[in-house]
Length: 244
Image (cartoon, rainbow, N blue to C red; front, top):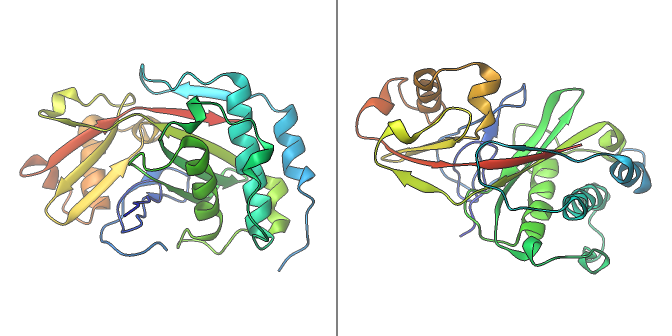
């Protein structure tokens, strides 16, 4: 079963949340994830054509994408947003893009949508179930229409949306929290039925220490802030963030 995250934890497709400032956080539990004027597709696509794609690596891992490949990912996401908020008529035309071998590699991704600096939707996956290009397509739809914290994105909002794509490295279990480096690693906590995740940039943006990060992560999973100190298992990962 595919698991999705609303920028920070589990549900059964799986939600993983970003907070209202746009920082990812966790949500406990399992379960399915869960009018406007028409805007031409060019309104979003033209922004992408002229934009410079910025890349931020949290660690040493990278999928080593070229500038053209990064632009193609954004073209897919921008076109997906236009397509899905307009009713998803017909099959999405992947054939119009140049899909490289690197973009076909199964990759876990997140898509975050912001408007005027505020979170508008954020959903992703922690497991590399789909190819990179299919994963960003699916998560763009989920972030726009299926983030349960927000009403669906409308066509009227598209010109003001800021799109961020996160590409995740393989996840690795750790034997000691000494291996967790704040700012370099995303962190997953698992304890019994509880599970939550933070992307690598969260602790840095919030100015948290390692202990504060783990306390907040425990709370986001629905546990006491000191629950991380005993009986919990941890996994880490790095990410590459792309933005325009």
